[in-house]
Length: 255
Length: 236
Image 1: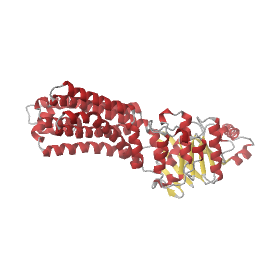
Image 2: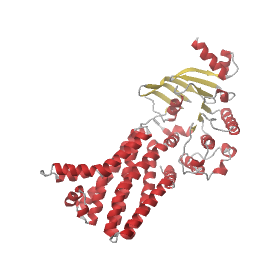
Image 3: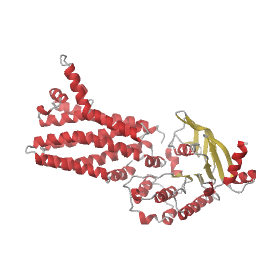
C-alpha cells in the first residue's frame, strides 16, 4: 500500500483546488480572529464556517478525484497489487492531503488565537470530519458509475448533514415537546457527524446560548469525559462503516 | 499459457461475453479484432482481473486467476486511454510502478531510451499530449520483461516514428517467444506483426486462425481483405 500512497498523497497535495482550499481556510480563519475582539466569538465564527466548508470540500473533492482516477485505478489493478490495497491507499492519500490542508489552513490560526484545549479539540474533530466525508464520498462514488450522478449524491448527502439534519431534529423536538424525548434526540444527533462535531467544540467553549437544539440536550447528557469518548467513538464508526461498505463493493466491481 | 473456458459476462441485459473459449500459447502474436461493442475490451479486462465474469474460468499457466493476483507480474498492459493523476510527473509514475513490481530487478529500458522519456521525467502528466501519454504507457508495459503483453489499440495516437519503434518492439517480443495480444481497428497496422487472428462478434469468437491459414483459405493477400472476404461469404 505504501508503494502507492506516497505518490497519491503527493499528487493530491499539489492539486490546485486543495491549495486554494487551504488558502481560503487560512484567510477566513485569520480574518475571523482579527475582526472579533473576543477570541471565543472568533472561534464560533470559524466553527460555523468550518462546519459548512470542510464537509463540502471533502465530499466533493474526494468524489471527483475518485471518478477522475478511474483509468488510473484500472492501470493499478492490472499490476500485481491487491484491490483492497489500491482502495485503501487512495482513501488514505485523500484523507492525509485534505487533513493536512485543514491543519495548515485553519489549525494554525486556531492555535495562535484560541485557547489550546479548544484549538486542539477543533483540529481533531475537524480532521475526523474531513475523513468521515472522504469515506462518504468513496461510498457515493462506488454506488454509481455515472460521474454526474455520483457528485449529485455527494452534494445531497452534504446538504442533508450540514443543513437539513438539525432542522429535522428541531422539528421533531417541537412536535413531541410534551413527551420526554430528550434521550431519543441525543441518540439522533449521533446520526450526524456534523452535529457531533459542533457539540464537541461547543461543549468545550461553554457557550450554551450558541448551542443548536441538539447541542443543548447533549450538554446535559454528554458533558463528561465519558460523553467525549463516546462521541469520538461514534465519529470513528462514521469513518469505518461507509469506507468498509465501499471497499467491499470495490472488491467486486467491474472496472 | 492462457486458457479461457466458457466465460460469460453480462452487464444487466447486455451480454458482453457469451460462453467464450480461447487458448493462447507463448510465442503467438494475436490480433483481437471485431466491431465496436463486440466484447474485445471486456475480454482483455477479464484476463487482467478488472472485470469479473459470472461464469467460466480463466487459467494462467494452469492457475485460476481469481485466486491469486501474482500472475499479473507476468503481464505488461498498455491501456487504450492512459490517464494518470494530473500532478504526478512521468518520473514518479514510472517509479511508482517500479515500486509495485519491486522484485523484478532487471529492467527493459529500450523504449525508455528510444522515446527519450529521460528528457521528460520532470513533466507533469496533465501537461502531456495524448501521444506522449501513450509513449509512457508503452514504456511501462514493456519495462518488466513480461511474458505476456496485452496492448489495447497500441498505435492509436502515436506519430509514425514512434509507431514504428513500437511495432519493432512488438516483433522483438514475438521473436523472444512472448505472448502478445493486440486489439486494433486498423487492420493495416497489424500486417506483418500478428501471427494469429481472433475475430469476435456479439461476445463470441467467430474465427480463430493463424494468418497463414487465413490467407490460404481465402486466397487474399492481406488480413484486412481476408476478413472482409470471409464476412461477405458468411453473409451470402
